[in-house]
Structures are given as C-alpha cells and as structure tokens.
Image 1 (cartoon, rainbow, N blue to C red):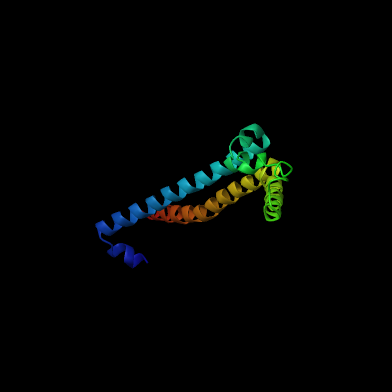
Image 2: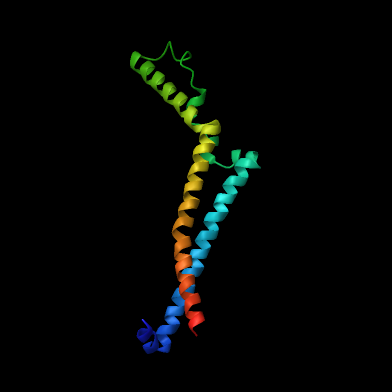
Length: 141
C-alpha cells in the first residue's frame, strides 16, 4: 500500500482526498439526520405529546364512512346491499381500532424510530472508517 501511495500522482491524490471528505460529509449528514429524527421522536413522546398528536396525518383523517348508519338504510337497501353495508361498517370499526388514538401514534413513532436508527447504523460506520483513513494519512505526513 505504501508503494501505491508513493506512486500516486497529484491528481489522483486530490481525487482521493475529495472522495474521502465527501464520504465523511455525507455520512455525517445522514448520522445527524438520524440522530435528530430519533431525538425529535423521543421529545414528542416524553415531553410534548400534544405536538405528536397533531402531526401524523393518517391518525387525523377518517374515511367517509363515519356518517353511515345502517338503521337509516334498512328500508331502502336490498339484502346484498345490507350485507355490504354491514361489512363496510365492520371494516370501519376495525380501521378505527388500528388508526386512532395511541395505537396510531405508537405505530408512527416506531416507524420513525426504525428509519432514524437505520440511517445511523448505515452512516456511522462509513463515517468512522473514512474519518479513520483521513486521520491515518494526516498522521503519516
């Protein structure tokens, strides 16, 4: 490896240095973003729960089924339509259980945490490896 470094032209050295610093910068950005997302999720959960409740769109949106009442359609609906309405209302009740309240926020919180941790797990080793190479080369000069 030492022979290779001695024979490198100035242009190759410059390109290698740019690559190393660019890899460190991008990895640092992703590590910082992941850390910020994780910190944001934790702060909203522990200290600012109202901020979390207003943020996730899927937790605040309801399908247009909420105004449906099966008793109002009893006289005008056919047997097939009544079965479809009952299935629709059953599906809506199931949707309400999984997409409202703490259940919805918990799922979104976990999703955000997984995204943040994934960013950090991938970017941090890349950052450390490239920064180690830079430090090693600086100390050899």
